[in-house]
Length: 427
Image (cartoon, rainbow, N blue to C red; front, side, top):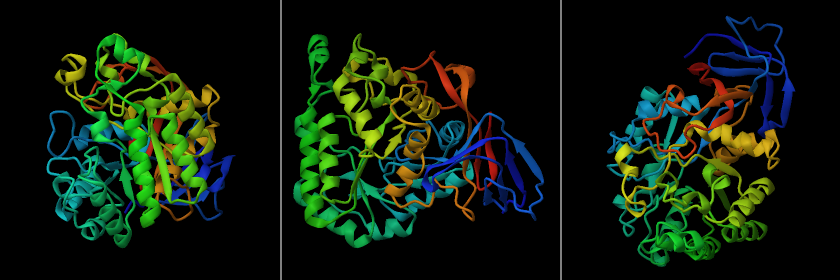
């Protein structure tokens, strides 16, 4: 236990969960928050952390981060990607189950969680596999995965064998008390596509993935969610129509939520022009209309969280012809500045943006994070919203350099990240 008593002073405290937006100190003792916005009379700090001009917020919660460990350590490790996450203000993140081996046993789940705490010094939460080995057919032992620390189950990007298997999986997850994370995509409609099915892909001669690949899968899942009552979260939406379907389901009272990857809020199919493999992602970048509707759904709260969808790759993974390159981009260290770009463009207010990075994602999986409650663990992000910096090697910590934002100027930079009241990153 950390017994250092810390006073963070001079910053603007924003805690969307508790509707706090005020200046004043934040006091920490024994790794926990003692007071927000004032200093108790009996509090004597051992250390004063002065942060004038900075924002003090809950640590960010990222619902989709691939650290590549175990199984693909040549692309990244818990040490490298944990350092990148801390530099991005992220204190809690979820790892999809498509590791090697798959997160389908309590042993693998515990290993990842414990190594995350020891090596990355962050809260690393394994998402349990919905099916054994992600085979799409045989259901995993969800109750055992829950006991091992998995806050949810999912099948990553691997489709289930049939709608009957999906129904059974939903029913089992209800009995286990675990939410299900879905990446909606119909595998037959997706076929061998690698870019959005539209004018750009046609002109470039790339096989397309139609919007219907996502919306058909969303429709199927919503029908079974209504039938079973499962708590479901749709991860990384990419289309306007899917966002509208989620909005309608929420209005009907279905227990559904959704997130969007940060790059879908800035890039479109036009960025693929020129066969830019750094923009090869799954689901694909879609139209300008889709991007604008996703932004609107985010502002309206239909989409309640922004994730990084972080996927670090080695250099060779992006060097082949576009269709043969591996999808995904490294995104932990750009999550905050790209979210702040939405604030600067008038899409969200600063408190709304921070809600999509903190209490929004935490509430979707029932995580005790993303809030500055007195007595809660002191997981904090402190950032300078006006700091201008350039995305280049000296500033980059992820093992993956695969980002189309390389070389761009960013506004907004993390200065400190704390977990349990301990500084895990100092910029």
